[in-house]
Length: 130
Image 1 (cartoon, rainbow, N blue to C red):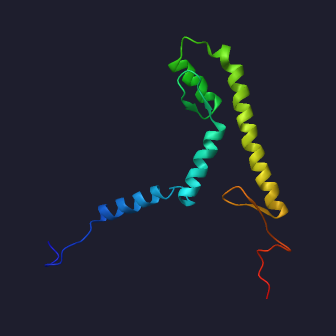
Image 2 (image 1 turned 120 degrees about the vertical axis):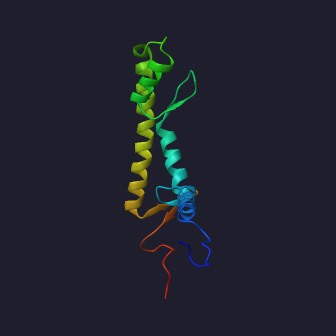
Image 3 (image 1 turned 90 degrees about the vertical axis):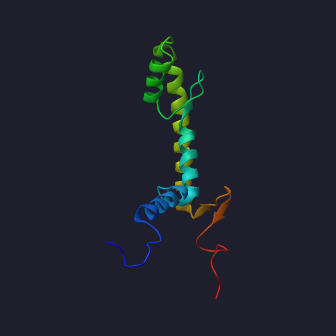
């Protein structure tokens, strides 16, 4: 049975798809597009590139499976130590950056989007005088 001359302008499916598209365009997991870019760059910092096919692998287990499936003529045991060293260095760099940010946050220092340092707290220019 119809709606007696009143046309429906948008279907529920259309509206839901617009909401989903807007959510994913803005970052999907929260924080907007800026946070999505930050998550992507953080993932790339910890990942290591395969020197043969240039594919990015997020961890050592994935790299092992990648070598076993894509480069089966090369023994994984021959190159495992090299990749463990690369992954360890990449993880250490990411961990160091995270610790630096946390220590600066505790000291009252804030990193701006451009990577500049901004002092916050007592005696800073961010407080408004009355």
